[in-house]
Length: 135
Length: 112
Image 1 (cartoon, rainbow over the protein chains, first blue to last red):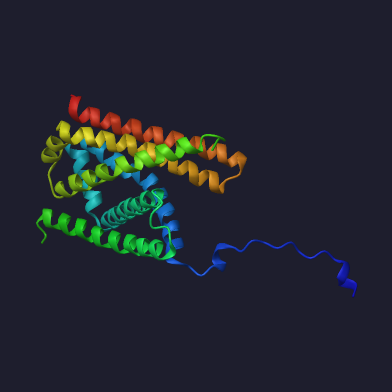
Image 2: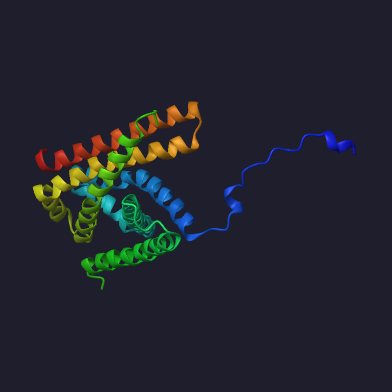
């Protein structure tokens, strides 16, 4: 009985890793991550504009970097982040009107964001390769 | 975020979000159309007012939107001291991005 007078440890709120991931929660987190990535990714757009303003030599050099495997991987990620964040934003705008707030609709919209962003990213890149004459 | 400014933050965040939808679509179409293009083609395209005006709008509205968004992230995760530093860094970064983009777009159309 010696321990009965000791104060019980205060309860802690459960950490993120306690929860089983649900699609709506994962999409909420991904929306924030893509937002932060796009924040930093603005450097890419501004750099490209700067290169275009600098003249042909530097523009070709920067375009060469983008054409490399790593460059294309970064741009593919940027494309997907942009589209995912845009679709996630549309979802939020729909919720702002008070619509689609029940669990089934939220989950359906979340899945549409994942699948839609993947599909649209593919469309954009197929169009890009087609422009390049690679298809 | 300072007290009593929540609804204004919400309003600007939503307004910039809505404006960014067509502007983002424009950017993606522009970039896809320029894949494989040489410097001269890209430059002529970027010098057209129907291209640089929306591009300028995209950068300014986009920077505003990301500044608002980063403010929310900072408010959610950082304590007072680090919070002010992070907010300042975010503001400096956003301002630098906007200034560089405006300068580049100006140089493209009106530079030597």
